[in-house]
Length: 310
Image 1 (cartoon, one colour):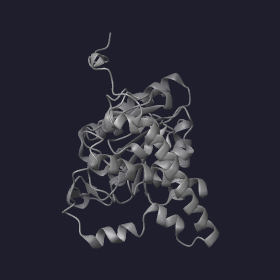
Image 2 (cartoon, one colour):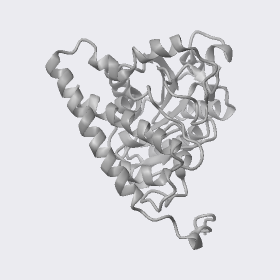
Image 3 (cartoon, rainbow, N blue to C red):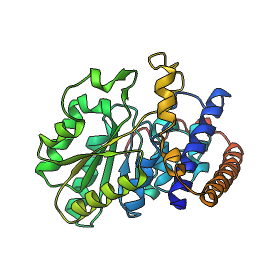
């Protein structure tokens, strides 16, 4: 459990530091934080092999960290520095890392699903046993391209996991006001995909679901759709005043988020260990941030590179 706590704490502190950087004017453009959703990327990446692939949304910092991308590179990329990832060109919303099989973030709602589906088709044709995770938010279930990806994946028995992070709100609108049905997973089940709902704030529940779905995909039994319920504890984006939420809703959500879950019922020795982990993680990330700040800004003469395929 200590390792799971460390990974989730690492994402939490990273996002909090990212928020501070944005408020200080050191990150241009919008950022979308995954505070409160840490158990989902940690649980799934716990079960993925190193060469398995992940396609995330614009709220994907946690997935990138859980997939093994060094925080220095992500900090630098968001600050527009000449990072080892995309040289400051990807920023918070589009960075990727081929070296870590992280297909990248995407700020277009649902646009990562067909990309991941294509990667899964490639993996199936290669017969290399690789699995792909496509993660997106609840609002993406109303995007036609996502439904098309679901259909192709099930018809072709592709090795892909569709992981929907249902964090209650589709931007500023409650998901319950946008669609009907027993669950989002029930909509996916209509395509014939093995689908179910899990508690996305419970890292052990996430690991169990990930293990099952990855085994199905790797053994040629096709895709799985997993709806992981959680709550977004930050705004939709960095400028969101969250006027659509009340204080009591957030108070309840903060009392049941993933890190609190692991602390609840732990003995004093374990709580002391978790406190030490929080300090260690903060020190580690502070060093990473300092390294990122020492990187130069990109050479302006390179601005036109990578715009066209040759």
